[in-house]
Image (cartoon, rainbow, N blue to C red):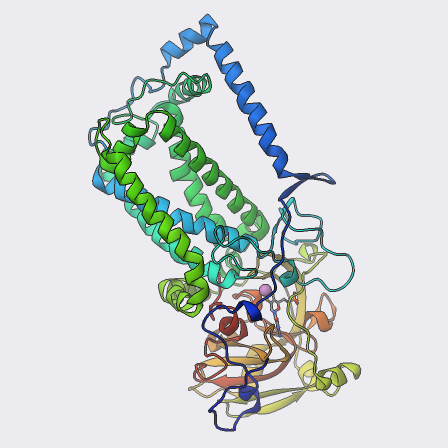
Length: 578
Ligand SMILES: Nc1nc2c(c(=O)[nH]1)N[C@H]1C(S)=C(S)[C@@H](COP(=O)(O)O)O[C@H]1N2
Ligand SMILES: [Mo]
């Protein structure tokens, strides 16, 4: 399957061993589909199928209605409902109705959220388990839609990824996290800009009064509204000017708590952010952040479901007129505008996955342009968190395709005594280091957290040669901007695994060519004889089984030109600090 680049003058054997790659996602070369299971939640040692939630929810709903109706026959409750009818007596009136900016922002918000949610689910399917603890040890997860991790044999984190349908995920292909992330992050940015404008306009007009409670009586009023909705005798509405207590509290929570929480827990999943805010990452570790990020998703999904249901059953025409036509009457205009908006949504929904599969490279490049520079900023603030021996994870997942060449197997048989690391390219002193020479360089040890793009993490103690010492010996020329790491191993589609790193990252004090893991030789599964640690990037950039390092000015001529194997073949970005 290896496609050695054509039309290339004979030259560097490492460069020539790289493969080209398609600009679209080719299913014939991709990981074969694999179904997950219905999501399960763990209680102690028991795993409960979430489908049980359905009948349970129906029972709770029916009982809730019965209880609310009984409550309303009690005089004291009737007094309570009269005293707190729903809108607090002191609530300030909103005089500007639903102005155009608000209606447009509502539409953009719902439009962006659809793709954020869909791509988020796609990202989750790449490691379909959720944990509270940083280490991701199998069977410590509290949620999964994948079977138990097999106890024997090698089970990589790629093996663990599951397929979700194209109408749900973007692009709905197993292990398409690279593309899903471009969608997720690019739309996050648009959603964030929309949200920032919304906050600004909210507080420079009287619209903030809809969302921000100004009296403690919002709570009894919210309870009163809940009883009224629950008993199916809906409260009197004055939505044009006031929200009732329950609306106000839910909207407030959604806008001012859930949305910021989504952003914080999203950012805390990135190595460069987490490794800078070490103390905070110890409280809100990556898996806790991922779990809370998922809870926010659940909140948004429930909110959307209940919100839309209530819009339709508490006076559809009026409600749609408010938000889609800006009118306070019962004409059909709002319904019509809503239908047009839904056509736009449905068309975009249908196009997203097929378009992403067909134009995968374009999605990668567009995403890179939209958020690459902002994302790259995280590299510059020196992420340098280290952990203690107690933090070391009992388990580390493994990833990648093992080297298969005879050459590698011969080296392995002799415990890598004949291994040599070739360092060349734009350097003053190209050099081949023997294993003994590398080990003679003072060893550096560091206990650091690993962040795989797929979602798992773990802390380990790594020992090896600081990359900065290698730079001191070979002396890269001023022209050298990137270090290319060539692996002994092939990538998933054939062709040598490689990755490009900015030279600045190579000078970082925690960038290591590691040969030890937790005080012992690293072992082949984790990258022996030598694997890279670069703590401000995601795991896929830490090439295992390093055979050579080349310093270059540019990487456009290497492989498919995207700066690494997964960048070429799986549409990842070459800078991945988050
Ligand atoms: N040569 C090579 N190196 C690789 C990979 C690979 O596929 N081939 N996978 C990467 C990925 S995606 C991760 S998360 C880490 C995993 O390191 P570990 O297996 O030691 O935990 O290795 C990285 N290095
Ligand atoms: Mo990874």
